[in-house]
Amino acid sequence: MHIVVVGLNYRTAPVDIREKFSISEEQTPIALRMLKNTKSILECVMVATCNRTEIYAVVDRLHLCGHYIRSFMQNWFGVSREEFAKHLYVYEDEGAIEHLFKVTCGLDSMIIGETQILGQVKDAFLLAQSEKTTGTLFNHLFKQGITMAKRAHSETTIGENAVSVSYAAVELGKQIFGDFRNKTVMIIGAGKMSELTVKHIHANGAKKVIVVNRTISNAKKLAEQFNGIACSFDGFHKYISETNIIISSTGSSDLILNKGQVESLMHNRKTSSPLFMIDIAVPRDLDPDIIDIPNVFLYDIDDLEGIVQNNVEQRKHEAEKIEIMIAQEIIAFENWYNTLGLGPVIQALQEKAADIHAETMESLLNKLPDLDEREIKVIRKLSKSIANQVLHDPIQRIKEMAGDRKGDAAIQLFSHLFALEEKLEENKELVRLNHLEEKKQKAAEEKAKILPLYNHKLAARP
Image 1 (cartoon, rainbow, N blue to C red):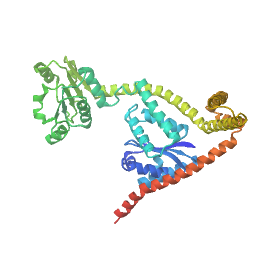
Image 2: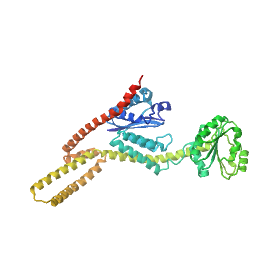
Image 3: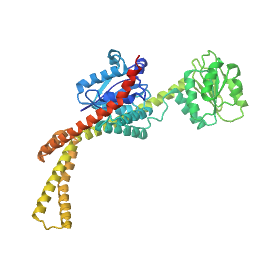
Image 4: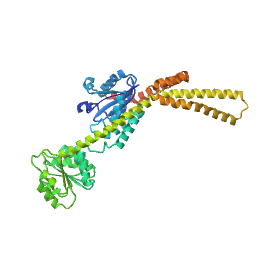
């Protein structure tokens, strides 16, 4: 068996390609079941966000799985293979495991270290699990990846530093005010950056938002998002005295506020609270000399981007620590995987020991028919204990050896030494028969689920 991931993301595909591979929550379960029924695919999980669409699969044939998965993508999403093939990336086995761990930790995200993707991967896994498209390998691998990502974020500071201009503004404001509760924000202009910044500040508790714009209809449209006040450029000065935070982003070629105006404002204010000013405009809206006014904190776009760049570098440094954690987790998964073949062997050994014990007890009871129930119980318990103690050390040793790179050879030798071949074949045949029965039952269940959807689709055709 092999683990593969086939996908495209913000690095490999433009948005006009990525949006063709979006999938609704309602359609995802059906897509998962169709993918699971694709040839060579034994287990599967689909992770679909605005920045990526990835198919994780356990396959029985590595050299053909890429073809089958591409065919599924073409058929399900209705996009020709020629259109998306060049945007795909494919990772196999250890590379696929490493990629999954990096995704869950946020190391493969547009904003390095973000945590939203962890929740998205977790939801994708739980959905696949509920649809029974995962099995032994993915149930272990995805749980390990999710647990490791949580540990990575708790043991490092990768998520603590703002790495966008809007978030940097929020963090700076928190340093000045402590929090934004009961604060009034004025946004001058309706630029995207200033709109995003005021959204973050409002979400952090600001109680009142004043939107100033030359076109009053645009000001009203933005103000409605925050239950705020809209006003024109001619009337915004009357609100300045009550404002704690000013965010300015206009297309003006002249200064909107100069040092003298702000000095007058600070003199006439009824509060001793500081004034936090963010100038995101180029050219600047706010007089740079404002920074010299006591109790006024002025930051321009370069200040914010400098903070962001510094924080990005700090996140990259923390990412190096997580890379080491990922390498350790890959080894842990491989050790666990190497022991998978050991389960049937240990089971066969224990069953063989139980059979020998049962035959021995039967022979003993035939030779000593006068034993009472208590004596039989004591003999049975002691003899079973002897057998378990004899097997304990060999089982512990083979568990240790199975985790090594030569684990398969060790397991094979162990089976030969204890003459378990016949028992293993018996168990394998029993498993095969059970699997066939489960497969028939699952096929019937799938047919019952998909047939109504198919009939509805046919009925909807003109």
